[in-house]
Image 1 (cartoon, rainbow, N blue to C red):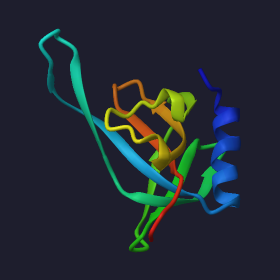
Image 2 (tube, rainbow, N blue to C red; image 1 turned 30 degrees about the vertical axis):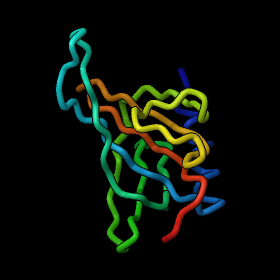
Image 3 (cartoon, helix red, strand yellow; image 1 turned 30 degrees about the horizontal axis):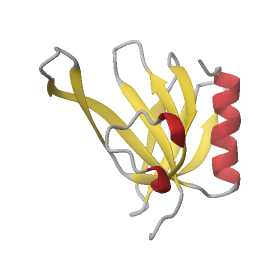
Image 4 (tube, helix red, strand yellow; image 1 turned 180 degrees about the vertical axis):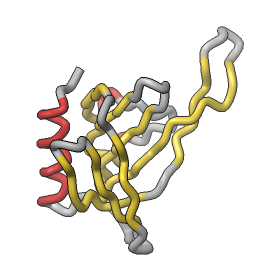
Length: 119
């Protein structure tokens, strides 16, 4: 598990280097033959613009300039590098690292740093 303080440092480093981040919400889409949930991740590529250490929110901006806020107040975090991807469609060369935020309502959001971005 990764603490909020460590997650905050990761978000701040992404702000400093203007890293392109895939903001992916993990959505259950079915069940396999073993009864395991099959998830799909979808969401925009964005820049982390601001992080509030007190409100525990992250302000993101997508390629069109639209801003949106992620509320991570009660989230637990897990950091991983490309060896341990939380994504099913994992292409190691595409990513640098992942920060997974799990909320009490079962919602999982993955912040994935892109290795390259054509935007």
